[in-house]
Image (cartoon, rainbow, N blue to C red):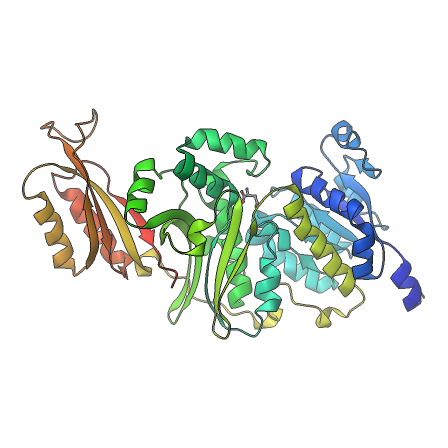
Length: 452
Ligand code: HSE
């Protein structure tokens, strides 16, 4: 039997799946900060091997570790105590993590898609084997948001959270708004910087943010992971016009993930959102992420930092390694539960349908510039009992080929801000607006959150 003293001195051995942007960040931090980390853990941590796709490329990094293309051999290696997954994707990451768990290894993953979609089964498997599944780096890159929700705010009943949780999307929106750059140009730069997902549609269509929101909502409210419950809308349809009109009205457009606990259920949604320019979140730019959390005891708290990138994400992976090392000798029942609530105390909640969301709305109509249009628009809102907060009518635009404007009358953009209303009612209003012969294009609808 190893004595306590010996167990403290014996190095903990790490195997890394993937040596891309995140994997290299982990390797660099473990090497550079080895002494500082050992002062925290009380025992050395050794990165011993990495499984990669391209052996030559990995060896050229000269990390002084064993490199293999045989990932199965790494998760089956009895020497390895902790497996860190930084390869991304579903397959083979999921089966490799299951094998690692089966072999009694603790697992750490930066893979938000994996946790959001398969986390319940991974956590159940880990519980059976008495090992830890850690995933801090899967949400908001370098921000310790899981730790904050699960431990720092553990006294609170969390009421809602709202965050900018996709660095690539925020980088694109910021550069479009501030420098007038094109969507494609900024996306290419985000890819070159290693921020973007392998499939950038995950970033721009909101899927990546939906994965992260799923994880935060479960940890905040103590419920099983439910990725299918997230309403998802991306930033690909945001135009420079909308960015400018929003600015004129005192708002910025940000891609937000919102999870809200209501008496009748939970709202989980990611979508572009107008937020007042004066809010801190409105001023989170570039690859930075931020999450605002409302707890019943503490009130609002805000967490800000880099949402992607090699060492920021590596920082969260290494923090997980340190946590796991500290908890390795503790009985499983004495460790922090994976989702922050005891596994048998997770509660299922009704996930609310979009029609039941409550929000204020920004609508942009393209209307023929002729008398009576404003009156017919106002009548629809009056009949449905929707209060208008502001109306902005812009300069007429010349007719555009291909729009539904047979008379070739100039078209005016009309922007309306509504008060808070049930989304089902706004959808009815949009349907009726769209049926007016004077409305020439699809009505643009964006949600507005005061974050008060
Ligand atoms: N593609 C992700 C982002 C990486 O841009 O936020 C970090 O999860």
